[in-house]
Image 1: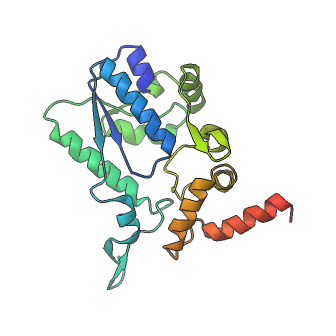
Image 2: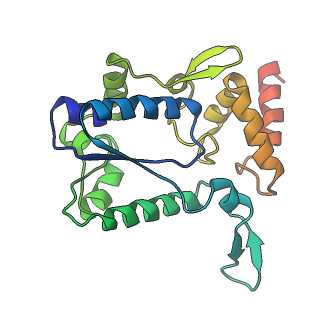
Length: 227
């Protein structure tokens, strides 16, 4: 969306990046490249951060139980019905936009083949350029690839294009990742799998309904061995 906004010379004064601190390393390389692109065009770049570190909210924040007395610590995995950090992200972005004392045209990168997301975004006064251009997620990926933008992650055994092994490049610890994606992280991105195991060791809640990260590792090993 950003690349085509610039290419078609749409009005663009500022670009916001919300940094969870839990992105794949290649996302930060892309961010740095985007910052240089924006500098060349005198477009303001603003980086927002959560009010408290992701891991603090995940494991240490004191949280009152909803339906009973007492407290627990941390939200655990973010995903499914408990997408707690999505809520924080939207709060931080909303607060920032309210601090701008001017009319805002808010470009949001929802693709043409995500119709379930149209109505809510449009009702919130957001503009959906990809929908106007009728660009699907596949169209967008090809558009980026054709212009030399790739999500290449360095691994101990070489370079991996994340869109070859993942359906979506979200936070590496997102519990919404499906089993195919998690298996590919185990197979191709061992450094991130070790991080997932570390997070799992700090919470009793399994990452997926089908099991904890440790149980998934056992499952994947059996599948690989054909057991």
